[in-house]
Length: 512
Ligand code: GAP
Image (cartoon, rainbow, N blue to C red; front, side, top):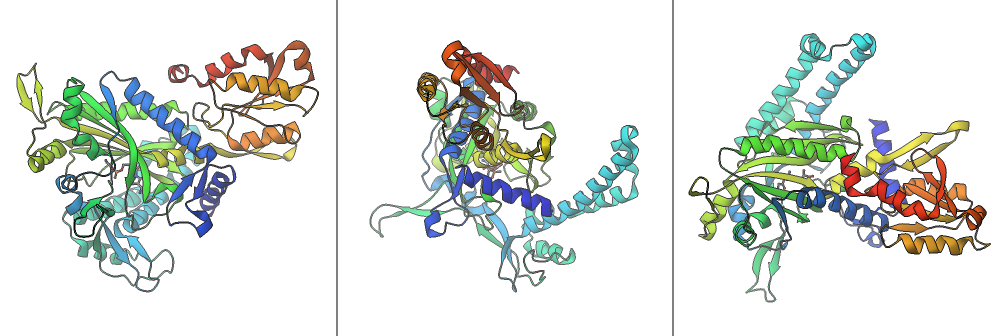
């Protein structure tokens, strides 16, 4: 646990030191759970967006994009259920005055039990080596069976109380489990209350005529209210999807864990409209497609797992989370929901407009069913950044800090380094940079010894360093150093562009 916290602190410090993420309005001591992306962070974020957009929109003939406004008609949120049901159960500790999400306190407790089971499994794996049969062990070891049963019972009871809105039972569960305030250790809790997460704002100049609005808590509703506009003007036929990237706002009770849970964040969402009755087949297909997308980035298969929901949102008939192994453990990165026809039907009812599709093959109108894939851009950023940051032991007992970002996402694809600041080498380097910058984001660095510059670029995540030395003047060759392997090879300067293109071209990357 302490090691996890140290790693996480290192991630946060590194993100600041290398211009990835700053606290918002830091000169005024920051704003709680709001962050700004620095010069490198803005590039990495843009590249993640592009990677998602290209895969979801450009590579799917039947998916189109949308960019809806953040401010929407207030009835939108009545129809979607957010006014009445977008609540988190909160609980205060009377002694420490700290506020928590009651469900998260219970889930964290259950996760600790799961960790105990995982420890037993890891110990057995070590003991039995190659002969270890995990399935048999999990099904027969009394301790693991007990831990698993305990975890399941707690989560099932929590799901049941939340579904029935039985907040008294959520409090009873916290007390029965003896959960203490993580800050103070006190078990002196208030009752559990519901808290609406939407940020209110006003539209209009004068106080009397202003309309009460909300900042959108998800981008999805901008897609639903535009369903008919896009379907008709794009002549879309079912099945088809509408994708969107944009800001969302939630007044989170406990916003913590850096950019994992913020009050202002970005989502990359896609709503896929299908025939009623076919939604569960599409749900499985989208699970698979999104899993492949994640794996294509090479962050490690073992860092992902699916978590199927026990407690379903009121509108869903199937739901799963793709969880990622963040520095603080496995947590939700992306949600995939089969949302039935709930949203379109609700908007039909509240607007009085038809949101249906005439299916020529079936010769009838229907309200389509929807599969949603929804990933937090900031969470994806944290997944990529934290899993890429590594401390490596080198020969001779030294270490290096290296940010092994997937090259396709790295802010700078290459750094151009003249070996010395004289003898015409900076001029050659500048010429190469001026040529490459039309196709790639590249940077220039001439300060310090070249070894220190390599380390600086390693830590900033630049996949290639291209060094111009005295021989370059004669043989027109440069040294290319690979960030991950630290291997160096000489290639003709004229081939640098093709080499970079091969490494960061979207198609080559996807084919790999
Ligand atoms: N339209 C469905 C929806 O909004 P959600 O599970 O509430 O579902 C989807 O959110 C994704 O948005 C999450 O998987 C997460 O990646 C991201 N997300 C949600 N709340 C967030 C927050 N407070 N800060 C950062 N990302 C958040």
